[in-house]
Image (cartoon, rainbow, N blue to C red; front, side, top):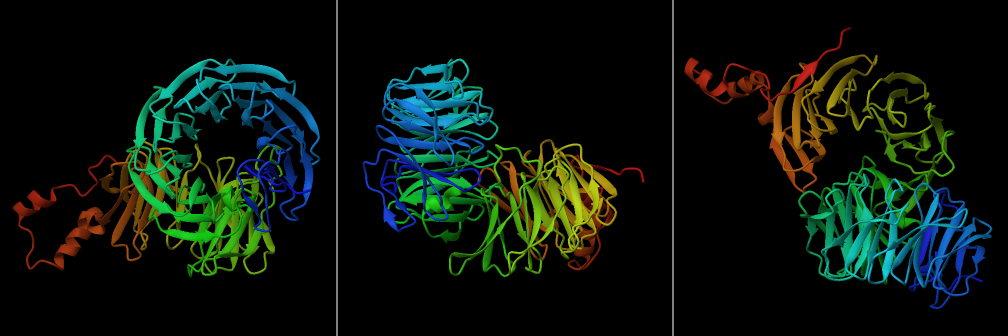
Length: 607
């Protein structure tokens, strides 16, 4: 028999199984509808829609979640028990007595523990393998909606009808602090990627960002006109997406609390997920549509509406996107280790490419695809992921053409040179590697002391720029010889961009500055202050403008005259004035130095 009610639906890490549990009404693939009242949970085959196993419960199973390695499922039942089942056969291996009516049960990120929340307002942590109760989190005066582990599995975050969210030590049950600012139910709460912040979503129409170390509300996200159902941090932790009953998904700056964009999309906006680089936002709605929409977080524009049911993967979140040269298609990388080519005009998938897993991938790691890019001529697809070997596919036939032999298997980003002859990978082991795009042969490795955050080829492909930590390195692309180290930023350099003529390099940093450098002299030409951490950079096609975006939701455009070196300004002036500067004017307006005067320096390594 098929399940009749689905309140939660989740893919296994490898995408081969779906687990469903009862709750609100939802359609599966649009072909049949679950009805209210089904007590059991089910394991389903997403390809065939067949029921692999029925997870029998004496009363309604209200949630179901996979373990990190996908080999088990934990369900929460209103009979007060959490149950752990094997996948895909559905064998019951552990029953955890967790109090009265259960609202949720989840595995910890390290897979050791299960956290449950019960109708008595108590959360509990179990060692699910032994069945031992590890800790009890007692302190809420109302129903607890959910309990989420911190990224390290050390802390638990709970949200409740008592208008609070609370942070607990998972091992002891000790309450670290209570977050008290909302005036109504707190529906959702989530840790930031670095675990230093928490965001909460409430029926009072507000979301609040909290500093974990200070246990205080740092930023209020005000502007939703309905209950906030869901919140999500961007991968960088600098932005937050909210999904609300006011039919909107909104993007906010963590730094300022300002609204960056408002997306009007779904009858009931219930979820939002960022791409890995934070450039795109995928949203899901329940009600009449069951669609996912993709938005550009830089412009606020709708990229594509992906039709179909949330159970079929559109709500799994895209990790990367790239457009075809003619902008008629978009390539997405997803959590299931695949890349999908979408026709934007038709709004449907036209081809799928599945990347091979890394030979060093651990059993609990997800086959996530972090990067997907079309070759300059559009004939090939380049994919990469932390746990997936970089691969090259024929864009027209899906046929795998090359596998790049990364020593640790994975690479979190891969990009083509402008002529399409070279592939650059940012590897999981911290290395930067350049490969022959035709043969897959490794040319050389660019050694870096720290993980590289961004990389770019010069327009003529003669130079490669890489950023790691507070510095940027320039390399000769043909030999791998390091040309210079550009220093001056006081925080991580997150973006590098060459001007179209290759003469200038712009660098953007979390230190809230953009610096412009001469590629030929390695000299800093300009220091442009931003009001927030820089998130992206781009030169206009003619090189006349430089645009930058910030974590505070602002965008700024400057003309190239603001960073031209003195000799170029004099040349420009010579075409616009009818006489030369006098000695006094030269001293007054131009000064005596033609350097940056802004603190940026370059060091050139010995040959």
